[in-house]
Length: 529
Image (cartoon, rainbow, N blue to C red; front, side):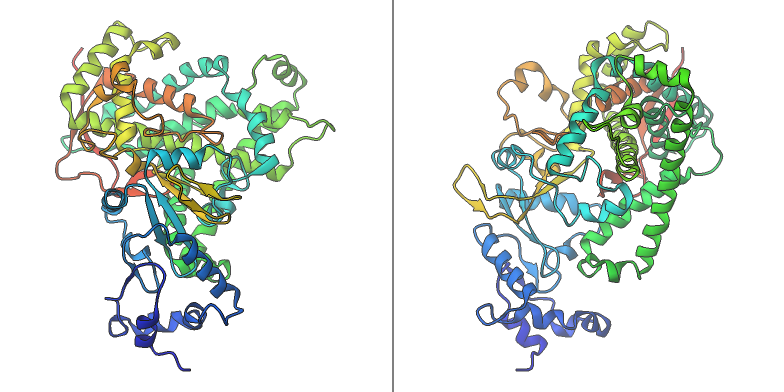
């Protein structure tokens, strides 16, 4: 039987279908792209032996207990996400209509259960289920099969191997390195603060956090903050994050053969090469340093080694170290995660404080009392800045650096209300929407640091707030990140006053981390001494 477009639209079942995108509204180019996929999608399930068809109908059955917003007949919900600053707001609206979770489709063959409720989050994150094999797969050519993506015994082995790199004593030694990197950035800001216009801070902060992670975790001094022009690694990370997100939303680009022939696929490969050149340089320099017997002995005698030295010196029970592939994957992973997430966290914190000068001033008073007129930041200060810490936690609630996480189920998942999802399904937790759940947060859009006083936090659902995720696969570097954000915030507020640029407000966009499409523009004014 010939399949016409109107016949297809009338026949579609499964996810709730928005049929407003009829054949008359499709361009010829789009119709040509659809091709054979239509036949695959709409064959009757009982008679079809096509694997794609069987997979689609299996997904429809799995998602049936979780109705969701109307989906386009071919693109699913992918067309709902246009990166115009409203994508995350749309998920919040959906979370209020479907407070526990609902199905989300990206094309005809990829469906997620999107969850928003703390009870569902607790059930999902209680185990060490692997990351999903769709969205995270697009990052593999970039960061490899490192701790962020790998699973099973490999993940367990690497997690156990790397945990000592974030020991209390190691983190304590990093404070001065972070402070030094922050001061370099602030000296640059002094030259910019003499101008009337606002300054785009996200890029400056990204360079500072890259400088910090290179010094702290990799014993690498790059002078990246003082280089002229744009840093090639930072630019590559921006590009890779954007392209991976775009690829996820374009279902025909899920196929490698198609994607790497497109302009975006070519850009992605080029950016990967740039990022890998940077990490290879860091690894090579440290390997060369360790050829010096005195340096090697010094490292072996240290009670706690830094991240890269752990990787280079580790041996299994057979005396075999990490392969070059595994080594670069972990370095690529932590080079990216160790600077980009903290850059996001610091940038959005400064934006929140610029929006609320009364909270900014309270933080400044607290910090200036600690510093006592100096800029030397001590480890002990970190536990003696409660108001600044509450402001940081509140900014992480409103603008979590990782707006969501997702898993692929290796076994059925049963939620507390009795609903369940079979093995093989993809489940995505929107941390951004979870943090705005009105059942757990009064006036959730308001910036209110007092939510995090001990008395206000005491009876809160433990899974209603998780900027670094929770469970076995939580962020291994979360204490490093919190420390870095506190040090940077303290030194910034001690030297500058921040003001919002009303004509250049940020446009939030969820890529791998939460960014602003147009950067974070603030007016900075040097404080009088």
